[in-house]
Length: 262
Ligand SMILES: C[S@@+](CC[C@H](N)C(=O)[O-])C[C@H]1O[C@@H](n2cnc3c(N)ncnc32)[C@H](O)[C@@H]1O
Image (cartoon, rainbow, N blue to C red):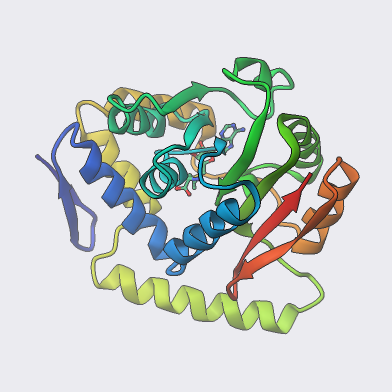
């Protein structure tokens, strides 16, 4: 067992190579930022069903541990998924979790590399789904990525991006929301919730994850340095890049789920 200690509190224990436990630990850590995370995924899959049906071929873009893939395959047994990500530790957890599930495939690629689509096993998808990830990119590379995604989505298929999207025209609302969110996070951390840094410290202490975790810090460093443009920006760029329609289908005070149909 790996005991996870921060300077403030003991925050959890995960058995080495226990992929289900790592999935649950990742989910709790992400929910520390986004208490509405599961609802966001539920609406995302509702809209997959509504627009492309219950047996889609999905690209889980910047898949991390395969969070979207797990919920997709549990809800739609006839779906298939390709997960793509650059993080060796999160991909280790994804690969371990889905080792016996031939519906899921995982690919290592950098979404800033212009040739990343060539690594995929398919050149066309019914749905490209992504969450809490594209804010790791700056605006220009993200616009380029949207152009590549538009080529991967079949006509009538969808892209959905759930992420932190900031409307700069509402600064007082944004400041109030941010203050409320951070106060809640501080309370949860004092109650023992695992934050990003503590979670990665735990991963580094698991003998199976230690080496890929060291590599992910060589790749990314400590922090992402991307942009968080507004939902209107995302919708406009997606139309410019080849989608016919794009608009939010869900939002919370801090996050938006944007749906684009090609
Ligand atoms: C916060 S995680 C979210 C993972 C998952 N979608 C979820 O909701 O749990 C962000 C993911 O984006 C991935 N990512 C960021 N930049 C990337 C890039 N340039 N290429 C591939 N993956 C990237 C990271 O490796 C990480 O797995």
